[in-house]
Amino acid sequence: MAKGVGVITSDRPVVIVDDDRFYMASVLAEFLANAGLEVTFVTPTAVVSPWSENTLEQDRIQRRLVEKNVAIMPLNKLADMSDETLTLACTYTGATHEIACGKLVMVTSRTPNDALWHGLEAVKDRWADAGRLPS
Image (cartoon, rainbow, N blue to C red; front, side, top):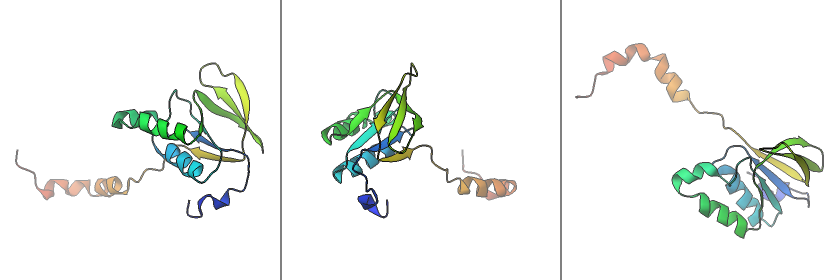
């Protein structure tokens, strides 16, 4: 991201495979589409960014991608890849098909930042001395 879209030199589509299901993949898709790149968005779910339904943003996110001409391929997951193509499999049937791919961006789980929790656990034996809030 620090180097921007200039690092993408292929004239073939950039494919984003979203297995995070929140907002990051859609942000990246919009960023790349705004730079003039052809973007394909692959998700194993029926809609883009389904977790964002909880924040009432899902319809707005998907509408923006449609307006930016991002090709949305719902109900598909990555099954295989080669230098120029991806093989996608239907989430329900497993039926496969290939799509063109110049660059692949995988958006998956994130590494948790749990340093605070581990720090607190390390001093758990001192918690009782910290006092209590009034009931």
